[in-house]
Length: 450
Image 1 (cartoon, rainbow, N blue to C red):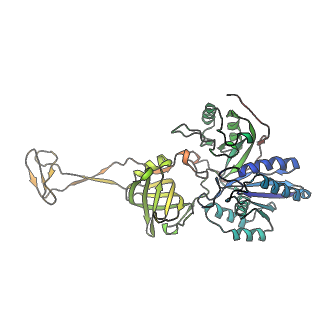
Image 2: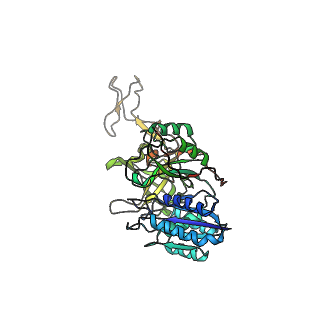
């Protein structure tokens, strides 16, 4: 038996397709060939800040065992499936496939994967690693998908990870409004929380498990275990046929993309970062209700933006004051003619609040009433008893802040795939113990009545 890792990336476009769907088709085909899956399909979200990213920037890896005699057939089957289902006519779609044989993934490939999730890597680096470790790569057009395909092979999700069950539509329904029994989604959310996440926006009641585009996905449910996402899937009532479903193991909701920098001077465009600094410019509102403020340390200063869709995060950012010590989490937008280098906020951690000091006029020492200023440098006068004084000064007092120390995240409707939601704090996994459950994928159409 041979251990084979199949990485796939960049098959979709804004107008059609989904790389997870290509993987779902291959699950069925590889199973029919007699391959044995040793892991759930790995759905690896890459750096969401690179300008050439795909719609969801997710790469896939299928990890199987098979007879050596089937290797060429599996490769041919994979290439054909990608070619048949990728949007090759779209200019920005450049699929890539990587085949790596061997039980153990080399450390260099794991490092490459981490760098692809947290930063920017070169195509030449991927090709050198493929050659060094005797992997095989197949690309279409510009072949950029080879980078993500190799990263999916290298990211073995040994640490924190979650699961997502994705249900797919019949092709005749692509592009049409998705039809679910909304009440069943609410009930599912209540029954499975906190072990599933981002099913419903608590502020608006909006259903979050359904995408909006013309892709094949009907819905996706994310959670802590394969059992809980399978249970959630069984509770959701679809009002249109489900073609198939698959459980993926993924880095969704883990903050895998964020890398802590030691100083603000180390922040670079397109890199997701965690950076510590002191608020140096007070928040200001810009058109479309976005909030901009700046943080600094001894090495430099950078703008931070909490955009209107982030909801509560934007409201918290508005309450910051100069002197607050914070950590900012987010992707870095490159500078432009109008704007400097900016961290697009995904999270904000308030480490220490600066005191809000206010000043008031002194109390009259004769009658106890609040005195009035007679003008700058002219002292104070009591309107009630007439007492005057040039020696009395304004009195300082600390005003309570309408803000608490702690971590704040954007509203679920605007959270990125990789952003760890608040409810996952304390649920992080330190290792992977993979057990494939019964029914981790299904191929039979289902139609449930409302």
